[in-house]
Image (cartoon, rainbow, N blue to C red; front, side):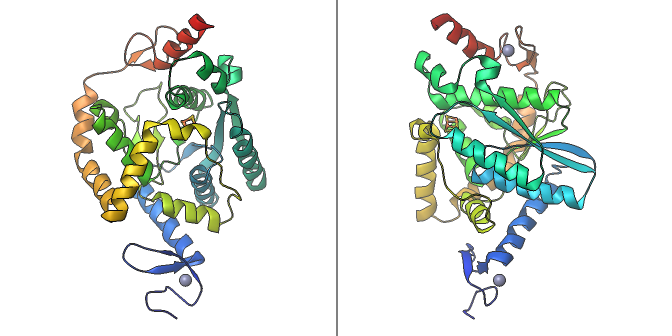
Amino acid sequence: MKKNNCCSKNPVIKLPAGERLCKSHFTKYFEGKVFRTIRQFNLIGKKERIVAALSGGKDSLTLLHILNKLSKQNPRIKVEAITIDEGIKGYREKTLKTAKKFCKKNKIKLNLFSFKKEFGLKLDNMIDVLNEKPCTVCGILRRYLLNKKSKELGFTKLATGHNLDDECQSIMMNQFKNNMQASARLGPISGVNKNKKFVPRIKPLYLCTEKETAIYAYSNNLLDNFTECPNITESYRAEIRNMLNDFEQKFPGTKHSIINSFLQILPELKSGFKEQGLNYCNICQEPASKGKCNACRLLDKIKKVK
Ligand code: SF4
Ligand SMILES: [Zn+2]
Ligand SMILES: [Zn+2]
C-alpha cells in the first residue's frame, strides 16, 4: 500500500492535504462532510418536508441521493424532487430523462413543471424575442417557479445542489458588479426571515468542491454521461469560473479562503440589508423588491415584443 493511501484499494481522489481515498472511503468522507454542513448551519430540522431542485446534472443528483439516504435513516424527514423544464433544445431532454430515471429507480416523487406550460413559451423561444442573456432569463424564471411551486406544494425547505465552486462564483460576481445586496442573500441557508411567501433555501453541498461532487456522482454511478447547457459559454459566470479555476491552480486554497472569509462577514451583510424589507409584486403577489417582480417584468417584455 502506497504512503498516504487510505487502504489497499485504488484511490479515486487526492485530497488537498495529500491523502488519497478509494471509492468507499471517499464516499464516507463526502457524505460525512455533507451531514456536518447540515448540522453546522442547522439546515434541516427534526421534522421537514424537503424538496430537492433536480436538474439531472451531477450536483443535483448527488444532493438528492444523499438527502434520500438521510430520509431513510430518519422517517420524519420527507424528500421529494422538483424539476423545471426550461425548454433548452439538445440539453434539457437528456437531463430530464436522467432525472426521471433516477427518481423512478429510487422511488422518489418527482414534481415536474415547464416554462412552456407556466409561461406559454420555452426558454429558447423567449431568447429569440428578448434582448437578454439566456442565463439571466433562465435564472429569474426558474428561481421564481421553484419558490412558487415549492410553497404551493407545502414544502418546508427547498434544497439546491450549489457547491463550493458555485458559491465562490456568485460571491465574486456580486463583488465585481457591486451588488452586495445579492451577496446578502447567499450562504448555506437563505430566505429564513419567517416570510410565508418564501420557502427557505438550503445548500447541503456548500462545503463540497465541484471536483469532489463530480467524483462522488460518477463513482456512485448516479449518472452515466456529462451534458452541459449550450448557453453556459455565453454567461458572465463562465468567465468567473475560468478565472477562479486558474487562480486555484496557481494558488491552491483560494476557493476555500473566499468561502471562509465570506462566512465571516455574512451575518453583518445579512443584518445590513435586512432593513430593506420585502414587498410583493403587484401582478402575481410573489415577493419583489419593487412594484413588479423580475419574472413579471420579463414576461411583460415578452408580451410586448411578441
Ligand atoms: S447555463 Fe444558463 S441557460 Fe443553461 S440552464 Fe444554466 S442558467 Fe439556464
Ligand atoms: Zn480506502
Ligand atoms: Zn410578479
